[in-house]
Image: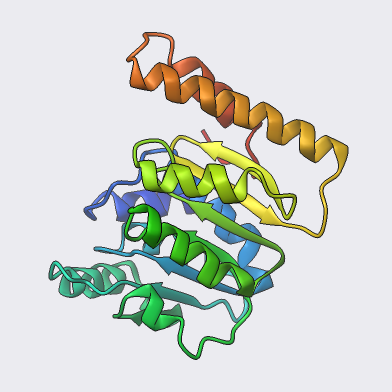
Length: 232
């Protein structure tokens, strides 16, 4: 991943409203770069296009890469979204789907390389997004979730259905993004890695809730063991 490409993406996305942290955008870029050769990139929850642009910039050099950005734009964000992706020059590899994710799923038949879940954060909605779209993720493909600490619905889906499953190898936790890779089985090393990340997630969550001054330490440790690596 050329550092200048990440800097270019940051320069553009700094002009776009959104909630990605300064390390989360580059991590999303790295995940898309890793997984987009395997299948479509599907984003659930685009709003004004900040994460969409990070994903698309990573895919520009991947032959045949295609991004599907799903969002009903209920709050009137569609115009800003289209303006921002055009400004970023990524509209040519992007297919916006202006609909709820459950509607977009009807008739879907493409293999997915990266599934980015950042839509409605309520438990039933996150669960529906995960179980509805995950079957299309190819082996070796990536599923990533945003806001896995601050939103109980997201956290519950991750804890109950992802981190307890032997079908997903944990790639990493970079700030609020948790990423896993779909596998047929887990090795002993994969299980040990999962245990370490689950433990650190728990420590950080408790420290965050209680506003402990040392809460940055487990978050830093999680970033340090996450893959793929991103420029500082």
